[in-house]
Each structure stands twice: as C-alpha cells, then as structure tokens.
Image (cartoon, rainbow, N blue to C red; front, side, top):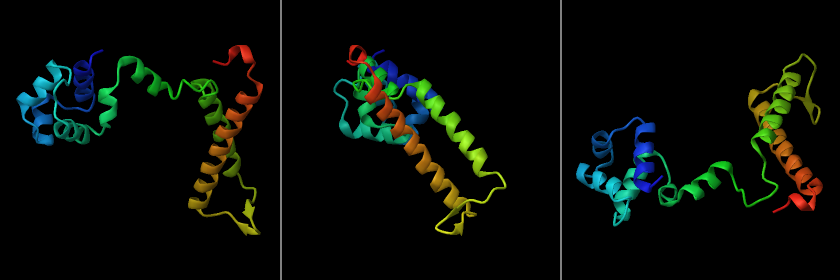
Length: 150
C-alpha cells in the first residue's frame, strides 16, 4: 500500500472525505488531492502536520512503509520476547478473574485501611496489570529456547 493509499484509507476510517478534511484542517482541497496522488512526495511538513492533527494520527505513521506499519501494529517484533496477542488475552483473562475477586464481599485492606474507594481499586488493578505483563515478559525471556530467539 502506497502512502497515498494509506492516507486515503485513514481519511475514510476517520469519517472524512477529502473535502471535509480540507475544511477541518485548513489545507486546500487540491493540495490534499495532490498529496494523495503523489504519495506525499514534495508535500510540505506544515500541511502534513495539519492533516495528521486533524485525523488524530502521528506524522511518522504516514512516512512508514507497509512492512514498517506491520511491525508497529504488532508491537516491537524485533524483540523476540514481545507479548503476542495470545499473551495479551491470557493477561486480560487473569485480570478479569482478579477484578471478580476484588468485587467479592471479602474485605480488602492496605496498611490497615479498607480499600473501598473506586479510584484506589483502579490504581491497584493498573499495578496488577503491569505486574502481569512484566512477569509474562520475564518468563518468556528466561524460558525461550535459544533456537527460537531471533
């Protein structure tokens, strides 16, 4: 997919057409059409930034090739221990189980104070999620056989 095709896809995904994007971003309609047709060649940085801000994307994503976009959508695939989608699902399942356990009638306390505030529960869950991710990553790093490391 060329940069122009990618830009067209993003414009449609965000609910714009070229005319509405032109009005919202302040970049001339013909300029946007030219950017799409020429795959952003010779496009000014100012216009690219205006369009990216309007679409809510970063300018770097427009400059990437297909393979670079694929790598960034999967996360850092250069890291042989990066969490896979299965790992992410496993973490979410464990987190849901922990949420259910926290919602039970059993008392939960920290430093002798009951944990009744919803904000405190969310902070605790965020911390637990980070811990689950880190432990999964460390386990993959420790137990992945050498022949599967890149």
